[in-house]
Length: 328
Picture 1 (cartoon, rainbow, N blue to C red):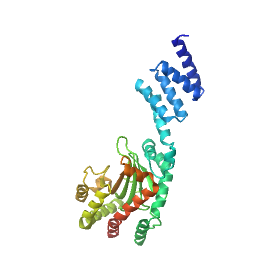
Picture 2 (cartoon, rainbow, N blue to C red):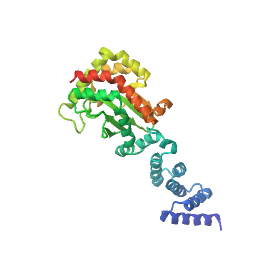
Picture 3 (cartoon, rainbow, N blue to C red):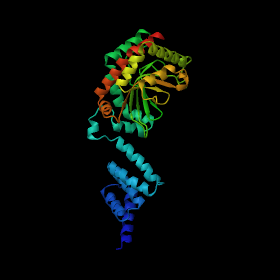
Picture 4 (cartoon, rainbow, N blue to C red):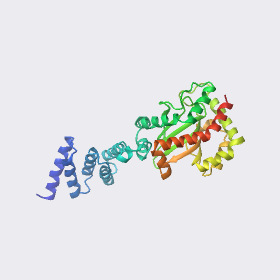
């Protein structure tokens, strides 16, 4: 039998197995034999990628599918399978990942790969367990009590429904009832080609476009922003800059962190801001980034992460309280 005859026989068998939805050992052997003899056979590479994906051999599947796409970048089947295998790999933790209780590269891959609402559902348990840990801290109790004294129906800082999907590969959370207040805020973000991580601090939702916005909501938030700026300028400028410098802190105005690298410059830009209504979002706090080893260690351990949230909220609580009380 010639090489051509052998390849034709293998191809016929590979197609039979594919039609039967048989992606087991024989299918792998047959397609491996094809690509060994005909390494430019993109269809065999694609089938091999599908087989390895179904056998949960995700790294091998990605390698096979990338090979298929290197032979034909327009291979939509290989493209779709590659997206699917990345999603499945992200949702299948390793033994080491299963031992963690916080947020690792796997969780941020889910956030990057899934639609925002699906990512919320996939990460719900970890987020809610973090909420439970934060709710048990003394600073959370102080925040709740301060809101209750001023008439808010507060029972705990974060409820189970206190987090929401957002555009740009993000999940955002703010203290219960705090959409139109200075928010004690958490957010997880995963951006292709950008940093993955989490931010913790105080935010202001200044957008007029929220679906649940009522009359005067934006004006209320803008008044809080002005009082926040005034409190920083009067009493907090030096201390806040010092805290940011020691804790990976920064300012976010609009869609992303302030591009300046110096906290003092970021704070001065915040104090000079007179167009908060057009920014949609203002935030002061700290960032934990997955590509920083020390931050990654905090992110993956729920207890350590809860302590980081506690430390941040505790440091910013007096500034939040002066802003919240003055406007009430």
